[in-house]
Image (cartoon, rainbow, N blue to C red; front, side, top):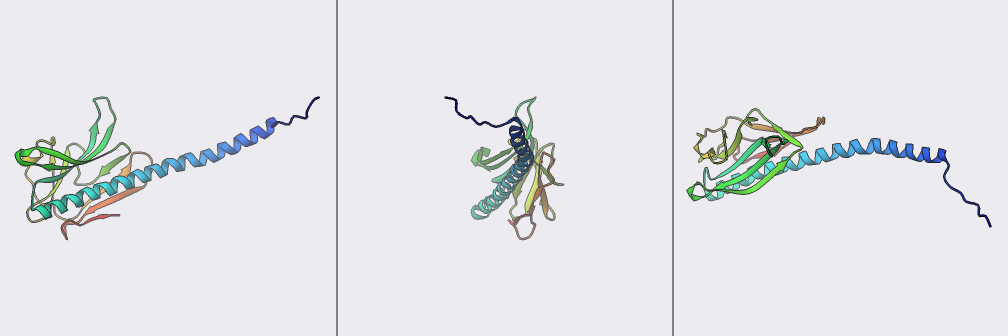
Length: 184
C-alpha cells in the first residue's frame, strides 16, 4: 500500500531560506552593534567606579599617593599580539609594594583624551588637597618616582569601540567638587 507522502517543494525551500537570510542579515549587524555598546557601557562604568573608589579610599584613610588608577591604552599580549585596553586600580603598600585591587581588560574599546597618553601609562591619583593629578610613567613600578602636579580643569575621557560604530561614552573627572566623576 502506497501512502501519499508530502514534502517541501524546491520553491518552498528557496522561499524559507531567503526569509532566513533576510532575517539574519538584519539580526547579525544589530547584535554586533548591541554587544559593542554593552562593552562600552561596561568599561565606562567600571573606570568611573575605580576613580570614585580611589577617591573614597584616599579621603577616608588620608593616604595620599597610596591609591592609583593606571590606564594602559595599548597593552600587548606578546610581541605579535593584538593591543588592548588595561585599567588597574592599585595600592602602594609600605615598602612600595604594589597590590592590584581591581583589573579591567577590554579588547573591544579604546580611550581617547587630551590627558590620557597612548604611548605611556597614564596614572590618576589625588594629592593632599584632594586635587586630582594625572601623570605618565614607563611602568607600574616607576610611577611613584614621577612628579605629580594637579590637573587644571575637568578631564574628559572618551570611550569608543574599535569597530566602525560611532557610539561613545564620556567620563568627566570634575575639578570641583573633588571626587566628582560623571558619565555622559
